[in-house]
Structure formats: C-alpha cells, structure tokens
Length: 122
Image (tube, rainbow, N blue to C red; front, top):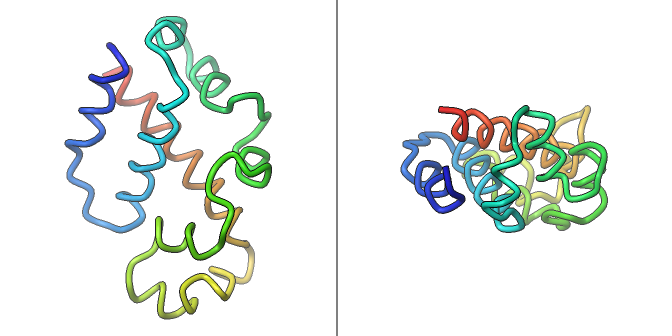
C-alpha cells in the first residue's frame, strides 16, 4: 500500500464524533513525514510507531516536545465538540482533572498511530 492510498482510506472514514475526526486528522498529519519506502519496512506495529515518532520515544514525548500542536486552544479545536469547547473556555481550562491538553494530544496521537497501522494492515 502506498502513502497516498493510505491517506485516501483515512479520508474516506465516516467519523461521527469530533474526537474521531481529530484523531483521523492527526493520522493524516503524521503521514506527512513518511515516504513509501519507509512504509515498505513496516513489518510490525513497533516499526510503524518508530517511523511515525520521528525520533521521540513515546507519544507523550512527541507531544510535549513540540512535534505536533503546541497551543491549548489549537488542540482543543482539533479534538473537541462545541459543548466541550464551551466547558473548557476554548482550551483555557484543563480538559479534566488528570490531564493537560498536551496529554490529551498524546492520547490522540497514540490512537492515530493505531488507526494508521490497522488501516495499513487491512
């Protein structure tokens, strides 16, 4: 499967929630730095993650290191429904009592990498 075929499959998903649409967009964004030659070397999920992480060890390190969105309101707009944006005042408040927005983004990036791998293997 080529990179363009994988992106087309991701774009044709029928995501109904803001979270799923955001995760799919993160997946497409993660594929920007990947070449078809890189994808040919993916034999396991770990190989895929290593390529997508772009030098970081974990998705948390990737997110907190500034490799994805860095501003809270950008992350909130990418992943939240309108009612969640109102509740968090467009990202001014933390999303919940246990996480900051960069942690939420790390969780979304992890799900995006899983979505990429499942789509690639299908």
